[in-house]
Each structure stands twice: as structure tokens, then as C-alpha cells.
Length: 155
Ligand code: SF4
Ligand code: SF4
Image 1: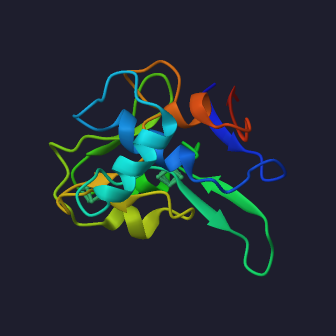
Image 2: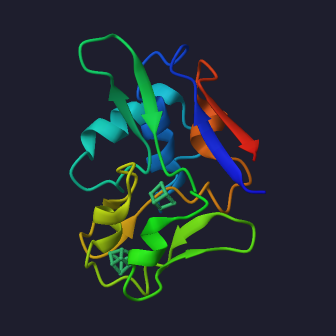
């Protein structure tokens, strides 16, 4: 059993707030009691230096349908098999994480992931991907989606 996030494209409104809250959750700087509109302003202002969002809102081409894409913490996890240093690994609780200290930026995991869920981190030296907000208990994207378009389940 592992925890996985499932997007609900029938209710996703494409607001990109999940990206904003993902960046905020993984940012060293935290503005206390920040409101959503303040975070959006900061997100836009610091777009070149902010942490890479670990979730991306995609639009199905030719439709108005949007959905949030992030790591599916796959059972076979091809990213972990492709990783040359062991940086990309499965934790005991089932989630797949990238140890940025071990990552050498070869991007094998990016090429191996069939879902496009791994990206280069903001320093371009290590891979970056969803860690289900290890330290927060509940993923920030799930918690803050205004339309409950993301759901976390044990599967
Ligand atoms: S990064 Fe890609 S391949 Fe690895 S577990 Fe996540 S979705 Fe699967
Ligand atoms: S980029 Fe990093 S995490 Fe990805 S395969 Fe290479 S060493 Fe592993």
C-alpha cells in the first residue's frame, strides 16, 4: 500500500494554485499567514528563481480540460531503475523520493519517467519531483486546491 495523488480533471479549473502552494511548501522562505493572492504575486515576481513546482497543470490539447500532473509513485518506478547513483529511491512507506545530495544531474530519471513527472530543480544540479510533502503530513497541493480536484488515496 502506498499513498498516491489522483487528479480529478472533471473538476479541475486550471487555476494553477496547486503549483503555487507546491512552490511555497518547498521554499525556504515562508511568509507567515500568507493569503493565496499574496502567494500568487510572489510566485509571479520570483518566477525565475523560485523552486521548481513539483506539480504542473496541463491542458488536454483542443479542449478546455485541465488536470494536475505529478509523480504517481509507480509500483515499478522506472526512475529508480534508471538512476545511476541511487539518489532516486523508494522509502519504506512506498513513496519515491530524490536524495538531492546524491543526485549528480545526469537526468536519466527524467528520460525514464513515462509521465514527465521529474524536472530539473531550480539550481539545475539535481532532479526535483513530488515527495508528497514529506514534512507536512498532507500534500500542500491537495490541501489547498480550491475545488478539491486532487485526492490522496492509499492504494
Ligand atoms: S518519477 Fe515518474 S517513473 Fe518515477 S515513480 Fe514518479 S511517475 Fe513513476
Ligand atoms: S538525475 Fe539524479 S536522480 Fe535522476 S537519475 Fe541522475 S542521479 Fe538519479
